[in-house]
Image 1: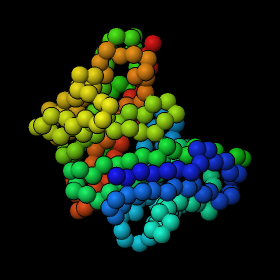
Image 2: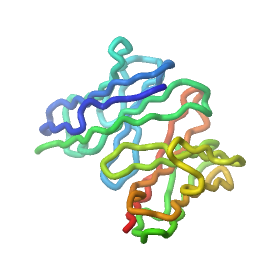
Image 3: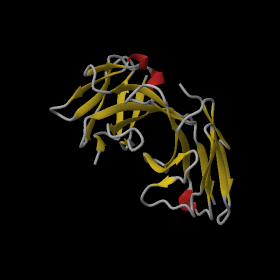
Image 4: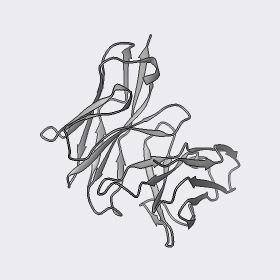
Length: 116
Length: 117
């Protein structure tokens, strides 16, 4: 079984300050982990993914995440927030079972607000 | 990558009626998925739709309520039947890339925002 917990439902930061969105996971297998972003009235966009290669993963728009197996965490960070980063962020886990059986499990989401 | 379009983008429906949502992909894909996102909630998988076979439904979802068609490798429909206000949600189509080895990226459509009165 797999699950993912996003520790904050809402995060507020000022423009230009660092962003930290926290995610913990549980998986029976070696997991693949993802962060997706959802802007209002738009579809989900993949920010970055971890698939058992480098533990520090760089994504689009300056975001990165570090896979820490000992802490079962995959927190999303960005050094300097921009107004356009305001959106809903989802942490997603997928176990590496057979391709057809592998499913995505979504966290509950974190709403990021960026203050001017 | 895969580009996914959905029709309609939004609709307002009356209780007891049905709505069919279309999903079109710009490339052939093996696996298509339908998700529901209730207001303020995360995404929940409704079913997996593979071409040439019956859709596989997740716990809590049944074919009579959410019939799915998958006539070819680029198209699928989801019908929300006998709607009630509790069905008000965003319904998203998703596909999994067929290249990339053990890791296959999953792409999402823009969603269909359904309101049931």
